[in-house]
Amino acid sequence: MSENKSLQTTLVHTGYRAPEGFSALPMAVHHASTVVFDNVAAMRNRRWHGKGGYTYGLHGTPTTFTLEGRLAEIEGARHCVLTSSGLSALALVNFAFLKAGDHVLIPDNAYNPNRELGAWMSRDFGIAVDYYDPLIGVGIGALIRDNTRLIWTEAPGSISMEVPDIPAICQVARQRGVLTAIDNTWSAGLAFRAFEHGVDIVMQALTKYQSGGSDVLMGAVITRDQRLIEKLEYAHMRLGHGVSVEDAYLVLRSLSSLKLRFDAHDKSARKIAHWLQARPEIAKVLHPALPDCPGHETWKRDFTGAGGLFSVLFDKAYAEAQTDRFVDSLKLFKIGYSWGGAHSLCVPYRMPEIRKTWNEEGILVRFNIGLEEADDLIADILQALQQLNS
Ligand SMILES: Cc1ncc(COP(=O)(O)O)c(C=O)c1O
Image 1 (cartoon, rainbow, N blue to C red):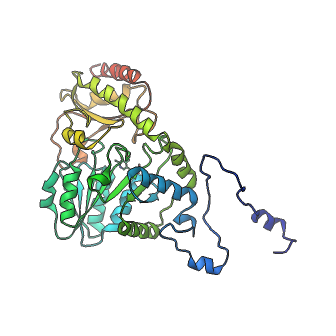
Image 2: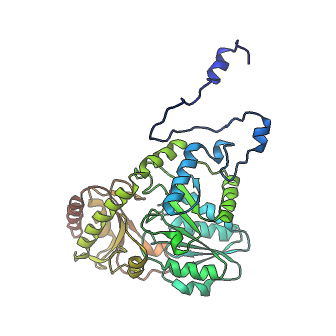
C-alpha cells in the first residue's frame, strides 16, 4: 500500500500488533467478526471446525476458545461449544441430534422452556416427545422406542428438586444405543461429575454460577466424544450461534472463584433449609441434601455438594394469596428468575400448570440463596412468615 494513504484508510489500518513480551494474568479480550489471512492459500487451507484455527468471529476467537477449553476441563471433558443462553444450548442439542421421525424423552420436571421446546418440536418438526417421571431410574427402558434418539435428564429438577438416578438411566440408554444429555446447571459441573456417571452430553446455563454476577446470558454444550462434537459444531454453525467476547471474558473472570462461591451458596442454603425444616408453616423442604427431597438417597450416593437452589412446600392450610404475601414481604430476597448470583431470590410457582403429574399439596416457593450472611436471610424469612396470617 502506498505511503500516501488517505486519513480514512489510516484510521482503518492501524498496524496494531499485540505487544511482544507482554504477559499478564488475565486473558485478553479478542474482538473479531472478520479474521484476516496472510494469503489466499492460507485462507483456503484453514478449517472453521475442529478449533484448529481462526476463520471468522462466529466460529471462535482466542477468548471464546479459551473459555470453551476451561469449561470442558471443569466437567472432565474434551470439547465445548458456547451459545447465547442456557436455553439456546438446550435447543442446540435437540437440533444437532433430532430429526423428523425421531423420538425424545424429557423428564416431566425439566426446565419448563425445554418442555416448551419439546412441544414445538412435536407440533412443527415431526419429532415425537414423551415426558417421563424423573424418578423412573431403570424403568426408562420401557419408554425407549426403536426411534428414540435422545434422553434428556436434569439433576435435580430446578424447581421441584427430584434427584434422578442418572447412572441407571444412562446404563439403560447405552445398552439401547440412545444418547443421553443432562442439564447439569444446578451443580455447575462441580457437585455432579456427569461424564463419570455415564452421560454423553452436558449442557450448562453459564448464566448462573459460572457468570455469578446476574449480568450475563450464556450457555455451553460439552462432551468427551469426537463424533458428538462434530455434529454439535455443524449445528452450531448452521444455526449461527455466537457469543459476545465481552461476556465470555466476564465468565472467564468469574471462573476462578466458581467453587468458592458455589461452596458458600451451599453452606448458607443448607443452614437455611435446616431452619425451614423446623418451621410449622413449612410442610416439606425440597433440598436434595434433606430426606424430604425425592431422590435424596441418590443425591447422597452421586453428588458432592448442593449449591444455593432449593424449594419448600408450604403447609396446605395456606392459600396462594398468603404465600404470595410471604414472598412480597421479603426484603433481602428479591423476586426474580434465575440463580447463581450474589443476590438471594425467591419465586412462587403454580406447579399444576407446569407439570403433567403433580401430586403434592401446598404452594411451592423456590429460594436461590445468594452470598449474604445466612442469619440475615433467616431473619428476613422469619419476618415474612409472620406476614402469612396478617
Ligand atoms: C435448569 C435451567 N436450565 C437452563 C436454563 C436456561 O438458562 P438461560 O436463562 O441462560 O437461558 C435455566 C434458566 O433459568 C435453568 O434454570
